[in-house]
Amino acid sequence: MRWDYLKNQWIDMAPAWIREAREGPNSTRTGLLDAPMLRACGDVKGLSVLDCGCGEGRFCRLLAERGAAYVLGLDLCDPMITAARQLQSNTDEYRVADVQNLSFLSNRTFDLAVSYLNQCDLPDFMANNREVFRILKPDGRFIIANLHPMRSAVGYWLKTENGEKRHVILDRYFDESERHWKMMNIEFTNFHRSLATYLRGFLNAGFCIDDVVEPTVTASQLEIYPELDDELRVPNFIIYVLRKPTD
Ligand SMILES: C[S@@+](CC[C@H](N)C(=O)[O-])C[C@H]1O[C@@H](n2cnc3c(N)ncnc32)[C@H](O)[C@@H]1O
Image 1 (cartoon, rainbow, N blue to C red):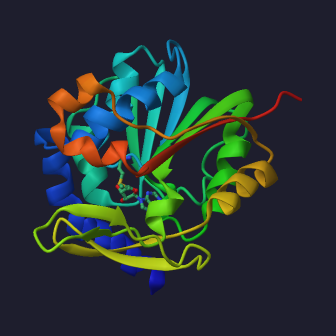
Image 2 (image 1 turned 180 degrees about the vertical axis):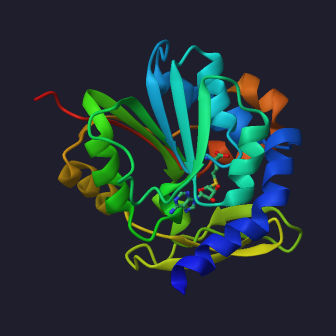
């Protein structure tokens, strides 16, 4: 069954993923995405937060450390949730679940929802948008980090014979369909959608778009993470800052 196939890819990837998240190298998170994601989340003190596709829980722990009152991390991959529970405090909690169906959560219960590189993994990202919209309180926010659509299309570097990066090849941008990649030596599948499809999807679900961020690196970050030099040339990621309007 299709669903098992996607889930099993993440189960296969989980040991390497958990090791990398905890031991590094993890420069795209620590050097690039964490800071703008935390900035977009703002002051989380006292908030109840949902993390869609939380993996082994690292961003949940960052939010709990910053004073969130309650963080619920959801992931469809059992080994990720088992790992997250091993580092759990009394504010964060983890559950195996498909973020396209949050029927076990009540309407208007969360102040903030995050999705840290998860929507590109979902066959139906609109189901996730609708469900998050439903469980957020009015004025609640949904902060989404995702692969940049320019890179999720087909975004390999074209290199010279001696390995120098010339430019990224952008192709099949309007072909919104599955993409098959290899990460950590494991085959996996994700889903490419255009920028307009994402933005229209957020609006159709009822969200206001407060901000769109294309993270890049500063000179000081580059000194610590020289491997992020690509980020000065092409966008790899994008952050959408959404808000559920008040009634
Ligand atoms: C790229 S990882 C990101 C993990 C985590 N947010 C992080 O930043 O380390 C994507 C995660 O989404 C999970 N995932 C994929 N499809 C899902 C679904 N339908 N429902 C819940 N989690 C899902 C995977 O198991 C994986 O842990």
